[in-house]
Each structure stands twice: as C-alpha cells, then as structure tokens.
Length: 91
Image (cartoon, one colour):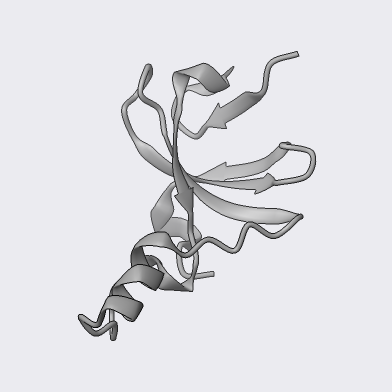
C-alpha cells in the first residue's frame, strides 16, 4: 500500500505527488547564527533523524504547489497530522 499524505488544501494524495523538504528543527531559522563554517554547517545539514515523531516540510508539487508542515512517525512512516506553517511552526 502506498503512503498517503493529507494535504491541508487538496486532501489525501499519494506520496509521489509531494516533495519532502526536510526536518523542521530549532535550527530552521537563521536568527543568531554566525557565519562560521561550523554554525553554517549545522544550519544547513543538521538533522536529528530520531526514531519517532518528526516535524517536516512537505511541498505538494503535483497539486496546489504549497509548502506545509507534516508530523510523521519515522518508524512507521505514518503521517499523523498536517497543517499550514503559520499555525504551529514554533512549537
């Protein structure tokens, strides 16, 4: 069975309609990050990759062409919730 993702705008669609944009972490915004190589490396490449729930960016490339936030379990790949970024981006 294919992975289905619930787009907040278009509803449930096959994962192949989407592009994964990476994990959202505390380093998702550049506020307070210096231009040192170490800080920039953490900003651009850091991913926790923990087993369990992950907050991620997804883009509906074959639908509404909007970015949204998905809460995905990295063990089961189940997406438990999707929402627009304004709602809880800082949580």
